Amino acid sequence: MTGHTEPHAQGRGAAHGHRTVQEHRARLAELLAPLAQRPAEERSLDAALGAALAADLVAPVSLPPFDNSQMDGFAVRSADFRGDVGARGGDLGAKGGDLGAKGGDLGAKGGDLGATGGDLGREFTVVAAIAAGDVPAPLQPGQAAPIMTGALLPEGADAVVPIEWAVPSRFPEPGATVALPAVEPGTYVRRAGSDVAAGAVVLPAGTPIGARQVGLAAALGFTALSVRAPLRVLVISTGAELAPDGEPLGPGQIYDANGWLLSSALREDGLEAENAVSRSDDPASLRHELAEAARAAEEGRLDLVITTGGVSKGAFEATKLALDEHDVEFSHLAMQPGGPQGLGSFEGLPVVAFPGNPVSCWISWEVLLRPVLAEVVGAPRCRRRLTARLAAPLDSPHGKLQVRRASLRQDGSVALVGGPGSHLLGALAVSDALVLVPEDVTDLAAGADVEVWLT
Image (cartoon, rainbow, N blue to C red; front, side):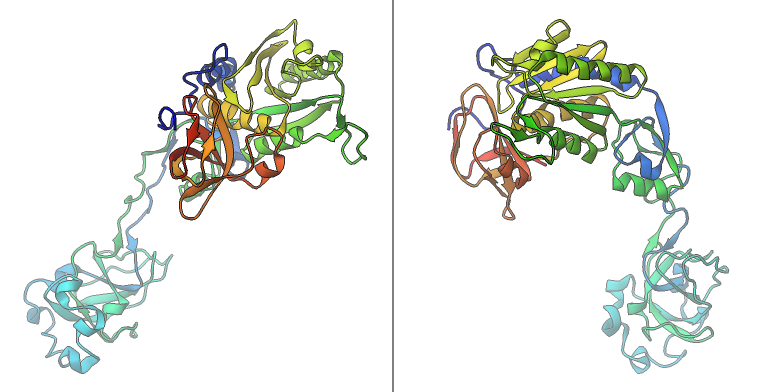
């Protein structure tokens, strides 16, 4: 191994003449910063999924909204276990014989009294059971109310004794007696506000809205949320070699994977995306597509264009030629795959130009654009990152951030899937992680720690 393996993936130590990943992300953030200023929208909970909150979410109520039972058991007044037990209803022997005669001592029914909350136990008169949703009557001294999980604790009660600790360990009819071990105040009680306090900021502005955030909002009584509207993106694939979908391939032709790959990735992460194809190496064809996109942007129907292909050093780089007289810059990043990149604007519409190989455009989205959008507009989410052991050795070019497709194993190690080639779409399809090898590392042994992004 050369150098170190500290996870950073920031593009330091780039190859001579190549822009670093960190520098390119900074340029992307500058280009896309105005997208964060779009007006907020009010969306129903289902329509808000995948967007980012436009403002702090403040809890209008507490969670739980009331004291409730954590267990199926008996709601009691813990004070009933303190003081002169005999004066509060007679000792247990006088109320019906010792506990052994009533079905086994409390130690056998749920642990000795010391283990269950105190040294004293007593018998209680059973009152009406309390189901979830009931509004119970106040609990009087000496009474125990059968209570179900989640039910409102009656006034006067401050603890719950699990049914497993009772003698008998069942819910008797009202008027019967039940022997219970002593418990402390708060035992098996979910206090109002113990999860969320009314008035608290529960989710800050910019939080991406997933299933868990929707669940919290629904529990707080929200039916709609103020969100930053998802970006509307057009993906344009370019190349004379692209055959129409569903038609037989001619000599030298391929089907367009990039448009479907990227637009699906964007939609999967909460953005609104469509894909188009410019099946020509004539720059005029792409300029026509971009002009249509610019008109859609003026009408408020589009925020961003991503092109794939035509950004390298070949003789027929249509994207470069089409954008030659526009405010778009092209550079080569110190990254493999995905080195050739472009960014800028076409008639005021932000344009990001990715390379044409499928894996290259996927890596460009994951490593370059996705983290920037997460920072600038809050959605999509950043990928979860971790450190894992490499299952097999690898080598990497000096001066470039190498991004390899991989699979995370159950033992916590990560195995590479396929080689470093930018055309290996089959390997990409069965991977679930990316391994990022720093620019100053040229080889790693099996067992070495590497930075992993879960995809």
